[in-house]
Amino acid sequence: MKKEQKQSNMNENDDCKLKVYSKRNKRTPVFITDFSHGEVNGNENGLKFECYKKNTSINNVGCDAIRELVATNGRLNYSGSSSQSALKYFVGVRNKETGKMKLYDSVLFRMKPNLKNMVGNSEPVLHKSYWEGMNDLTQNFGSKAKKRALNTLQKCTVDASLDNSLTVNESILRSSPDRSSIDGARQIDYLPPQDRNASVPNEVFDINDIISPEEDLALHREAQDLLIGPASELYERCSSFCKYVAERFRSVNATQAKLLLYYNYLIIFQQLKYADIRKKDPTPLIPDPYKKNMLEKFTLSSSNEKGRVSRTCPNQMKDKLVAYILVLALFIDDFKINLDGIYKDLNNVGVPKLKTIAEVLGCHTSKNNVGNIAELRLPLNEVTPKFSKKPSSRKF
Image (tube, rainbow, N blue to C red; front, top):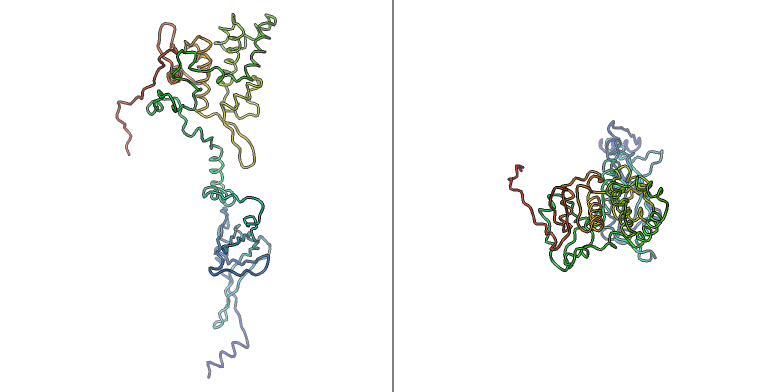
């Protein structure tokens, strides 16, 4: 009887004591969803919710953290962001026996249906891959460090044709494939197109693969103006040429003048530094159409999330540029060149590097009193794999 009287008094007085915990803000809040189009009747499995939280330096768990809530019932998806209102929302749970109430922080989500993936939509639905979805989440909710890593990865992404490209060094020669087969021979990406079954040396490479028809027309006009113009103008222009071209431009015909002019432009492009490549106009000394074609052929472009385009020249492109310079020199010097005279005009490229590239191009290299010679003669030189006799000292 006393117990029933005590329970009756509790209901009449309806006393309530609130207790606020000091570590309340560090707990995960309660999620309250408000659907924009009314109540949602879930299917047999009910609605499935997934929540994504943005990493920040502070308030990683509390109500101030930015969250994205996604709900699906199999037919339609709903999405909503956590409200950043100045009002604080709480959920209270009252113990009827003790009269105490515990308060829980809560976050209100305004859920809206996602109509982009509906069947009746006129726009095609593009399904993203797993990694594309992960990159989107990193871009929207990742930490600053992860965003920087993602941006760096996107900048370093190159064309798929360069994934298997090889750089000229000893490591290439150890794994260099057999390039003696007639059809389907695997071309190294930095090499100009070549016919290793040509009957004469001047048919191994095609000059049209080095100089485009558009560039050839511009070079023809430029060479004619120099050869027909005043001698003072020719002398002034020769003073700006590289050593290799200046030595050969004294007595040339129109065809040789075209090749030498283009060789000089390639040398100017090869001497560009890293800071120059990233400029809006990397080569003010090279006119179009040469500038446009060289940038497309010997550099790579990428853009960040803001649409800013940056240009780079990786090792594969540098090797490709040197290979084109050597092939052009072969046409100029009747397929026998002195590498010592070429490397003096190049930037950060020594004679051993030139010899390696020349051998991969099919040249036979030798050394005499004049210097290091590379000659393109038949049969072409076949690069054989080299193996180190020294055992590896690396410990695993």
